[in-house]
Image (cartoon, rainbow, N blue to C red; front, side, top):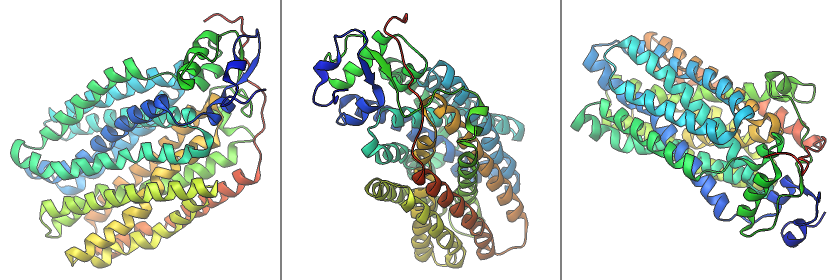
Amino acid sequence: MPRPDTNLGLLGGAQGVPVDVAEFIDATRFGRVHAMVTALCAFVALLDGYDTLAIAYAAPAIAEQWAMDASLFGPIFAAHGVGGIIGGVLIGAFADRKGRRVALCAATVLFGLAALATALATGFTQLLICRLLTGAGLAGALGNAISLVAEYSPLRIRTSVVSAMFSAFPLGGVVGGAVSAQMIQAWGWPSLFWVGGALPIALACLLAILLPESVKFLVAARSGPRRIAQVLNRLAGRRAFRGNETFTVTREAQATRSVRAIFAARHALNTVLLWIAFAINQVALTFAITWMPLMLHRAGIPLGRAIMASTLYTLAGIVGAITFARLADRAKSAWPVARAYLLSAPALGAIGFTASTVWLLFATVSVAGFFVVGVAVNLNPVAASVYPTAIRSTGVGWSLALKSVGGIAGGLAGSAMVSSNLSVAQLYLMAAIPIVLGAASLGSLVRRTTASEPRGADLAIPPGDAQ
């Protein structure tokens, strides 16, 4: 078959000419369509990150206004994780049947409406329900944003592009941290959620207008060749295909779009190892960042500085995410991410020993964020690379669901720890210990995936299929 980059004109025109869509995308330069898809999905991730951490920034003010014990926020933080499981699984499965684009738009609207409802909450139960619905929308949106960007990115830069897109997630937390203290002081804590609800709904309208469907999904779903050709022509920047070709995705086997597929013989152990890595990383991430403002504020640190510590943690994580992504792309392997995962254990454990000195706390928190958040961001392209197109959203969705299990555990563990007599140093040491298991799981997954070559049959779309 001719190389797409050099002989695009030869690919169109002849009836039934086979075109490998994956090979075509891998050979393209990163152009306008790639940038648009990545940017739109990055905006989703940005608002996702803002709405995820808005509750952590608002928690001290809510506790004071409602006279709530801080430990009661454990179930509220955990409800976000429960919603994440529901959204990751159901919306991921929906996306593998109906498409990434429509699922992403629906999930973005869902977490926007849930954020607006949070601003109107007047008690514990209402807040709990709102956070559950928010978590469902957030997980569903993230899973499909990751899948879309991964499926449009050339293989040689895929890890960097997905990680750069997902870096907008912690950036959303940074933006929230930078403005939340002032917004709460000026307009009260509900203002965080008015903003966090209106913007996603507006963004969903843009997604519906501008975002193309995943061309790999269209092939896997056996869409009409003319529709596939239109998308590929946008990528090529000219009319390279006429719609009478036979579009395939080799290297990826056709699979059933059920959860059974990610536990098929080829994927079962990889799925388990991936889930362990996701869940444990999220336990550490949730405990560190969600509880940080409350714990530091209760320890006597002013709310503004407590939020600043969380902001630095997240901001350093963005730097870590980009650093590890570039290292992974250069190594053509996820080994740099696995090694960073292991180093995140001592980095997180050190936080508790520096809490009494503000400048040292800020420095230690930044190092921990560099590793913990940096790893969290780069687990997403790892997940996207484990599964073929036909089950990618299901696989990524279930991985995000297990990530949400870690979020639940982190939220509830924080609640129990806040009620205990343990010192801050002991709390962070306990949170760091399980990271070693997560790092071992990711290392095993990387070893397995780098040792095996992808196998699979073509997903052929005959030129005569109806659109």
